[in-house]
Length: 249
Ligand code: BTN
Image (cartoon, rainbow, N blue to C red; front, side):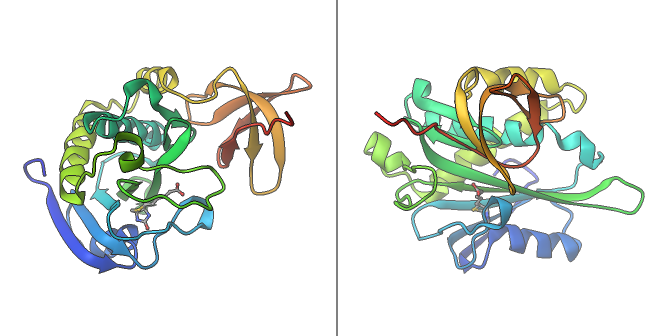
């Protein structure tokens, strides 16, 4: 771990995000990592669960930036880029490692990592803590996921240990967080866009209450996905999922 960053390792825990939140609420100053060999109640985005068998990486970074919740717009994309850096460092072919909005990483158009960012603010508006939870498919992947999945082992034929993956991820994320300027969203958006999956193309978008097809245009400076509907209207998505358009051929 980078200097001054604490780390806890659990063979098994419910959720590294939940453990990190408990430590934050108990007054741990952070930054600190919580890493688990296995999770019994791994959490995904939008209330889903995250299958968490031994062999993959389950890690959460808790830290206390002195900024406001609205200053976090770039963070999901910074984290996605750091996960991308990590997969590439372990041999995933650079051209195949893509960013899918909001912060999934795909290898060969299949999901290899998911990120769940949670935060809490103090009275008065500044953040109390931020937790970045990262799951990386090192050796397994679910075969029943809504979006097709893969693992680093499946792509490269190499088995990477949780310890090695956690070490490299911590370095890559630390370097990107260190370089982060909260008032400069555009350079992060520009880099994320360069490696993004589906921009300029038609995709199926799902929110909690609707599913529709649209052309993905890019990111707004508060992190929303801008998409153009078939009738020409532009829409901004703040929460949801993106899928390929199923073809009938
Ligand atoms: C998603 O794609 O839905 C996000 C998945 C995030 C999973 C990670 S695993 C480590 C951390 N602890 C959790 O309970 N969830 C995140």
